[in-house]
Image (cartoon, rainbow, N blue to C red; front, top):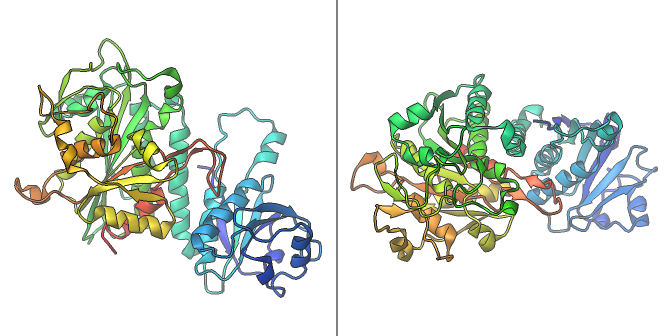
Length: 495
């Protein structure tokens, strides 16, 4: 989890004990000459104006002899832009051990945004590369960051930024790990080990326990693999907690599509199909680290989706954890099958709200592109998550649950089918409607309202395949992790 150590600095920016500097500028015209003497002249010389998204190294001997990079915020910047652009600066300024960051703009909470951006932009994953010492030194990102902050701010104020940064880094580490190094059992064991020092109780269901528990969805998806599936329950229950948030994550450690086999090109990167499980693990760890007064339960539904003579076939009928029978019409629509069992298990504990997280449908990429998470559900949960996303600068967009599509879930031979083959319309909505049927009733009353529920489809936002931007590298993004931590901190309520 290689993220920089971060601390607060109260000395003038150019006097910090750093090897290099990153400064965010909103407008050169508004640059404070007392705080940054001589810098305006150097920026004018390279025609740097503070345009949003710009990045330049600048030689400014009248201001500092240290290497200096400037990033542009634009004139209408907020704290979210500070986070993005400071992150971009730290990401691009390589080869220095200690980097100091500051913001030359009057923006509320700017120093906190700078701290978060520096942590997020400082992440890297190169542990599997054979690099020479020289190569590693020139490409390394800062191991330590000093954030210029106002008097009265202390390192304790960085707890939220640290926890969120560590959570995102954990997600990226796990998603970047190749499938040959991360079986369902290995991921489950890692989850339990990673919470051992925290006030979190871990329970793992192996294949025998899954059979005894009737988890037919998880078992059906994992049937074709030599590496048997797992279900993990993590429970953080601080004394006096008044709200209970349940998190359910899809954990397909590799997805070939099963017997409904994907084309070869579509299998590249399919170790990322366990991103949802990684995120719920990261979020419950952060909740415990921050000592949030909220009861949090995380369910990781983990399986390989592989073809073999033992694999589930199209046309097979699985019996889910609540007894619902599901005709499998497409073995590559497996995520909803493992999630369904997790949602049933989570519902039995009658939480105040349930959130599931999954790289679920390619259709959400068609609808929203690669930077926005699709948000669906019922009750106040979706609104509460969208507010959390807004507070944390995460990109999310609400999609409708279209009730007129309910008949498309019907099966001739079972209670429902997992995919409506031949119909390519609103695939993201179809998957959400499937999952909704596994959300339990409040107080387990047969005729009661369903437990408030949020469904997050991160198939697009969870992985960046484009040129790096802001604090985001090419590869796993940890999208929605920070928003989920904020959501949990609010008790999953509309705060």
